[in-house]
Structure formats: structure tokens, C-alpha cells
Length: 245
Image 1: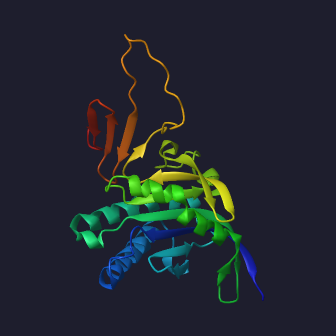
Image 2: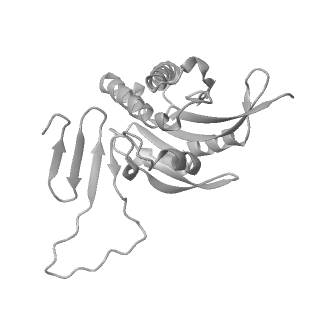
Image 3: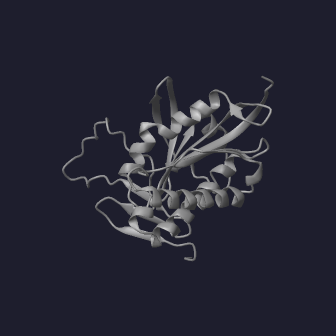
């Protein structure tokens, strides 16, 4: 078969807990998600009509055009997606509320005569979307967190830590992915509630003297368009909004 190879960035999304809602609710949340995803892609300066899309039943895979700046798939795309889902959930019935897992990757894609994609990169994207760390993170996160994103190491290396506007490297932390034949590091980001420098659960806390105050952990919560919340465990919560001096 005559195929051409192109380097492409790609994403995939999947609705958490879509099974068991019944066809009426499933069809509705699919419609809402696909519309929100299209708007988020377009607001990020990416032509939706030029994307290669595949319906995944309760989600979608999107391969963006070859000239796409990958960092825009994080900022503003994730922010736009999260804000729109939050707005939908505020007025939706419980059965129609939407939270999603999202995977981001980039690599060589082999395109057939009708632009049908194939290749190892698509397999990696699928493994990221189904990986246990992102599933567990979203399941354990507060309801206000509507998007859990998992970046491949390659995607992370080319987008995070380069000073691109609106991307805070502290809101990503490394996890291990082991799905079927795929074992690799990846980077997790939660929209809405992010722990900065999450503690190592296996580490032994340092000993303190009786006259020393207990150490406190710091959490930074971000909600799109609603400022930043800084809180300390067992301490005081401070809320900063963009219009404060």
C-alpha cells in the first residue's frame, strides 16, 4: 500500500464513567464533548477541518495538522476544554456531567491514500489514554477537576519548561506507565487542582525536634478564569483573583 510518513502531534480524550448511563445520556454527553473539543481546538488556532479524527465511542482521537505548534495543545487548549466542561457541569444533570482523561503525544504517522493513519505513535497514544496513573488520578481528584492529562515524555520535552506563556512546569509530575507491551515515563497534569511538588509516598518524613513547628505542605489550585487558590495543610487558605493588586 502506498503510504507517506509525516510527523504529527495528536490527542485522545475519553469520558470517565460513560458506561451504565444509558443511551440517551451517552448520546448527549458525546455530542457535548465533541462540540466542546472542536471549540477548544479551534480556539487554540488549529483548523478543525484539517484534523484527522476518529470517533472512539465515548471519546475521540484527533491528529492535528503537521504545522501545529505543540505547546498550543496544552495552552490554551487544555484550559479552554476544562473551562467549557466546568460550565457544562454547573447546569447539567448528574447523569450528563462530563470529566475526561486526555492523552497527548507526537511522532511519525503513516498516512494511506485516503489519509487513514497508522503506526506505533497511535498505539502509544492509546496506551497513554488508558494508563492506570491517569485513570487513578482523575478518580481520586475532586469533582472540580474535569480534565486529567497525560503527556508522553517526548511531548513533555518539546513543550514544558521552555518558557511558553501560560504553561507552569510545576503543575506536571512524572508517573510510570506500564500498559500491555508499552512501558514508559509520562507526565500527569490535572486541571483545577494541582499539588506542586507532590510528596513521595515512599519517603520517610524527616524527624523534627519537639520545639519545631510541624512542616506544612502547599497546594496550588487553579480554576480557569477564577484566579488561583493557595492553601496550606492545617493552615489558612488565601485566594488571589486576577483583579487584585
